[in-house]
Image (cartoon, rainbow, N blue to C red; front, side, top):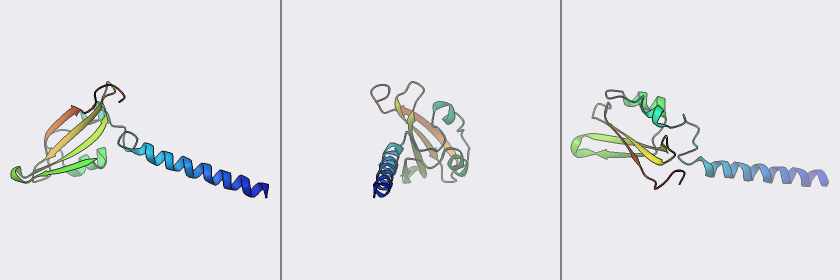
Length: 111
């Protein structure tokens, strides 16, 4: 009986740990390469969308701009100073990088 209680307790502990790990995943703990200003500095105009996907993983958000025949991928990360930031990569109709933009979205470090 005691062994069964120990096994139940272990199963409950593991379940809680996995649930917490899933909650911590968010944009700042995904396990795809650690996002940073240094990492994003490797993206260059003309780079193919497939290269960006392989190097940096799936974006957190996407947006199409039909009038300009472009679309953007946005990655959320912590910049060098610890601020929450977005890094946006815009692709043309042939899926090549045409523009890059980084902006802070937080009001202070580690918010």
